[in-house]
Image (cartoon, rainbow, N blue to C red; front, side, top):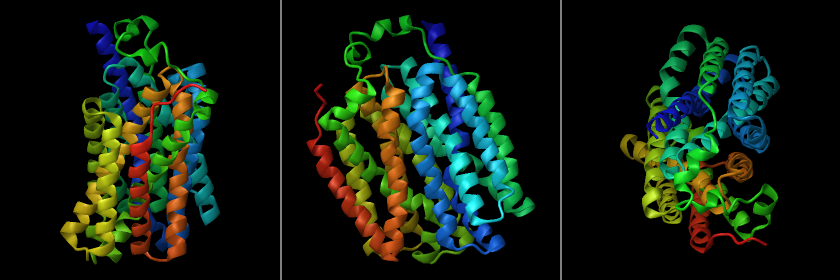
Length: 395
């Protein structure tokens, strides 16, 4: 059994390597100002690139989840790593906002989507008795990506300029993901034998994609995920800008929030994932919604300065990480582990849609404060939905 455990942790190592690279997408706010200065593009157009890449990457998981169930996680991750790298390399040649949206938003987004589901669904199959913790570690690495590469990106931006930075990080990510993919493999069926009695979903409660969608619980779960991730995505995409505009910070000081978000995003995924194993998934989700709504309302009605700005943003990032750690395990608990890749790929579309809805609200209100109030109200709705959700029953 020790050798099996060692093999499982090697899979986790490969997963972490992949997730850190694709998680660097959360460092996008570092590129906003350099792109605007070099090409004269508007802030809304540049920031919208982040929404596109999140939406495309989430949408791609529908197909990558199914594909990895058929051909295995290693091959799908390799495809993703290559496409992701190519997308960033192409972005280094972009001279129009349309090219930026296509190369980074679409091509790189597809690559991220191919990579994201594979480590997640593979690792939990090695540790079915520690789904919350393992999911937290795996997606925590995704949240840590922007922290790991923040200094690399900032150094390249100052030395090579924004276009060459995309070229260099594209090559780095491609190589690291190819290495990480070599460690991804599924456990043989016998490895689950000792968990059969404790984890009945592994054998008895596996829903197919069509069966999952037909349950009444699915739509509630999907909306909960959408509402839960909206605030975090808003703050991550505009982190530096919020610090400058609302807290009156210098751009160089506000840029440090990227590292704060990465640390709390990553730690939130691990800590909330582990807590969900002990407290229960639904209780944890309620807590996450409560903290998120309180933080959004706080930023709406209280004057921000250096300290309370970083505390509020850290709280939102901490809970955002929790949502992304707990919802995969809820999907597995409710609908089984066998088809987790495909099933979670559909649930994950809520995340992609929330990346689009948030900026649309911000653009139409024309005010960050009003946008925060609306996001806070959505979190309150999330609390109500979470308190009403029930374990699904087959139709």
